[in-house]
Length: 192
Image (cartoon, rainbow, N blue to C red; front, side, top):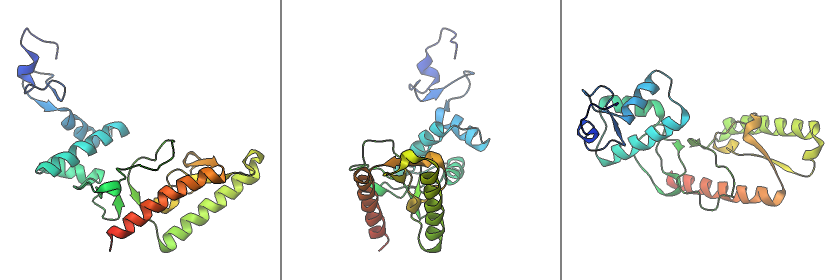
């Protein structure tokens, strides 16, 4: 909005931070702009996360429009926010981590998590083990350290993506393992 001498607040429902009014004719929320970008496949990850939060909050407060429901399904958003593993995904096996208490002081994996079990987990774990063994053979500086997947394979993380791997001492790795085991127990407790 470039202004024509009128108060910006009048065009933006008294909320110029959340609303934009490029033409002066329509109040369009920032969320609507991002929803349009999602529909066109052009939304950035940061915008998607902002939109997920917006949709989750709006849904918990009373409901979504049909357009918002479509976008929420596309992004895997549904209501709920339970403790450290609130189930926000349409896929009932997916969940988000809201409480990172006990997680080591390091970057946290983003997005949703899904506990892999049975042959699905066995296959992914075997891929991770083979990839990690190959890395140990290729790089001698990895001798004496353990390779950890930041988004653990057990929780749907990539077993082969090098960007998902970090070298840790056994003591450091134990801190991550302790955190993820806590999340695993919490999630399995919710399924009972």
